[in-house]
Image 1 (cartoon, one colour):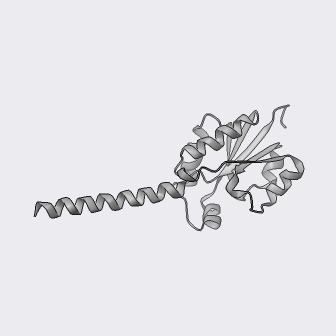
Image 2 (image 1 turned 90 degrees about the horizontal axis):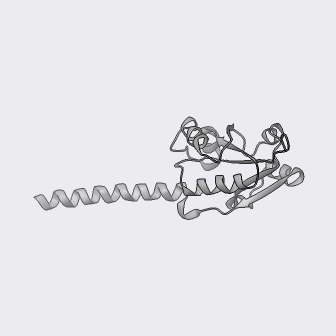
Image 3 (image 1 turned 45 degrees about the vertical axis):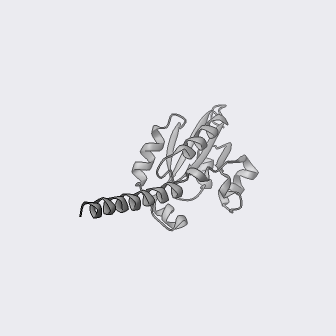
Length: 153
């Protein structure tokens, strides 16, 4: 708590920003007065997702910072870093329920020193789903172009 205000922290990659991201930020903000959002570095994303994000850290941070629910966005180079939780006197950490079974030191710390709230993961609009749709759309465009070209001959 800072100056009597409840501090909520959430973090993520925030790549290909979509409705699921908005949901977690909106629901996180409802839980407190101040919402601090960690934006994972490109290196961190590569480490745990095994691929780099589509947008750079700088671009993703710019997008998250512009969201009306966010009071502050910060760099995250360790998943749910205890140093950040202590520095900002975080009361609540929110995270998608797809992380429920994962062991993170920061979550363990918050279970003892605050709260961890799991928010519903919107799998039907995830970044991975969006990337698959984009790839399929590209394939469909090429296929349609080939069909149009072959019909002219």
